[in-house]
Picture (cartoon, one colour):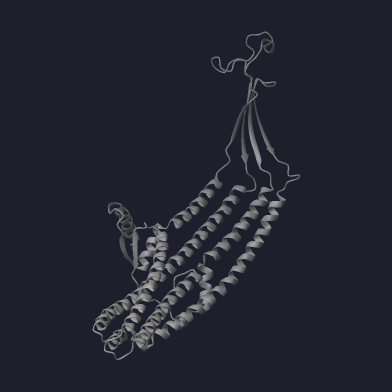
Length: 430
């Protein structure tokens, strides 16, 4: 499914150029949008590369230090006095190369002690885990942003249909009233009142379309889509969960297991512990082994010597960095504990908000009178034309119809949003 959506997405992007700036209309379900988002979002692609960077750091930490070679004490010329009048004092290496030339070659290799390399690798493994959890947190944030935009667009599309339906009824009534005014059956003031109401709906429609376009723009940015795409979201029935089926303690445990921040703080604490071990190991001096070849520089014409060197830890025993590492281990543990307390508060709040939204939604959807609104719209229009009700009664009903429809759609939107907020808070799909 993901591969199909990706190929479909690429095909649509390429086709734009052949259509010469013609708008492409798409109808997508929320789950299709999310699949495209996971494949195309540039922020996700960019942040995911941080994990590859962390992996490269681990690879680098495993590498040995390069050996060092140096050539020195090379005389570039020699005088007769230095040669004590002889043509050749030092024989050439081969041919005429190296004739009367002294030099020294030294090969040095640094050896890390106290398991520094292994400790560094272990530390960087937890640095990679931190990068993974940071990526998961960014992904989680982008997902909730995407879903909020999707739900907002679904609401705006539905409310736009309500306004369009009312505008259609008002247009039909306006045309009928024009005929009645021309025939002298009704006063022009009633037509003006009807036309005024129609203009109010036109203005509200304009404002709604502006907000809808802004949300569609944000959606296309998240999807990495070209501006010429016009997306309509196919609405689906609200999928809700009975609040009484959710257990707060169970939600706590789920969040502790799945929330990226919780894993992040644990990884950060483990990183600080590994860093402390590494800093303590840094207090132990490293060894430097060397092999030296000296040509005619001393008593022997070809001298090969071996040596070893190390720093003497008299003044710098890495005391400051060790102290910093100890403090950081305490700090990360405190931050982890603080987060868990904060998380429990967030879960309780998200659960209460969801329960409130669910109760309101059920109250509204179970109201039989509200479910009869669409049928009443046509009845009131006929009654107005038949003069069974006044213009004021009709306008009042139209306003009540619009307000009630808006309340219903808002309740549905809020339920969707609170479900997403609860899933976002525990870090897992319900």
